Image (cartoon, rainbow, N blue to C red):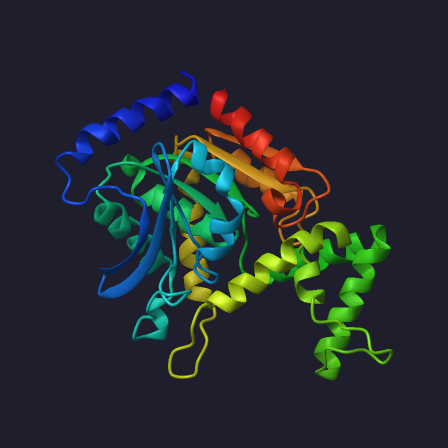
Length: 317
């Protein structure tokens, strides 16, 4: 069955069921209390509902860059707890995958739909997959990017180091980016000895080259202006080994998922090399993996034309 037919069927279902839902799906910007916390979300587009947000960076970056999907989906861009305009929880430990997963389900109920699609980028892809494992009956499909099958914390550090070294050996530009970032860190400065500004080195590390980085940098500035995840009592959230182990346990259940999933990664994502994106693909029975050339961690921003072409092609299959 064609995905477009499925999308059409879901759209009709949403129209019919919205008549009896407590909350009508309407366009606009909303500030609603969900799980005891006021969350901000924006609704745009047409078609079945797709949720997109991020536990660290909120919604603004996706709202600015996923407009092509609004022709096919009712996009619900949301600021996860503690990001953007949304309230932070009272306790630091409430920044965890269980709460983020619960947040999605409560938001789904708040807008009054039975089934949703999820666009998951980077850390949000893990939240999307955990939601799919725990609530498969409410998920129509997943589009995941900047992701992979992960290991424990030590394995993550090793992979990142190996990937970084490989890219340094292949790209003079990337090697300079790493050097600049290290200089910033060691010398606690954003300016090198010649007066060159190094402040964009950390975000460049995630991209393919100078040209693609210049597409990403303005978006990351918007995210910082809107507000990344807020500290609580002066402390910032960091993943714990116990929380990582919980997600590793969730990963063992991926083989039981039959949800249609597109994994669309940049071929030069330093944090998620193709080898581990392919491992995720092999552990998700109903998935397709597409690697976008000349792209790092943000393929739909670095190479938008090719990325959305591949998304549209997958939806038609």
